[in-house]
Length: 235
View 1: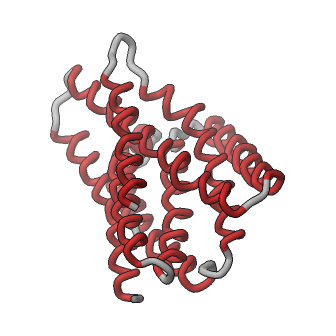
View 2: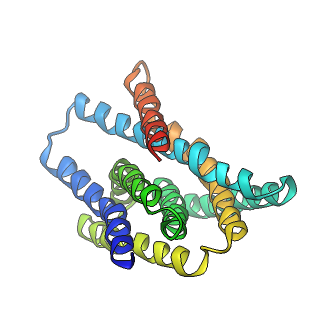
């Protein structure tokens, strides 16, 4: 079981690095054209749709399932306020890493849930790992562009993404060994993450993905959410 857990959580995480590699190739080997500009913004909105589906279909339902109204509201509000503060701090320092924050706030709780689920329902955990991996690709693609745009070199960004790709294994092991019998704590973690992600999504990611007189970005968000629906249906 441990071998399978490491294998699938490793797959879920390595797509962070793969998404960064794809963005690096796209940035440096595809010439600048209006079409390229539209593709990058559509990828941003596609990632936003997937992130939104993670909130609506994975993170919040777990909170609703395990928590009463007041604890759930407190965890959600704490996530919003803490990420409001983080976002303001990053803005003052000229950083544009909201997509990276949203990706990790989505990726880590879901990896923990993956580890906690693996002991109970390996089939569901396997599908969850595939879903997380599919989410990470467009999110990492967008995060790479944000980080390079905020001053990081391509090499440093890829090194960071390579390290982050192993966070899935760490989160899954924590979930498997420490939170399998703690559904309330897992639910608080997911609800907290939901508040933070939703704030970043509405304040930073969605406005950045919008293009004037272009409808591909809206389609990208809708189809990104559809990916989440399909993943949840399969799970």
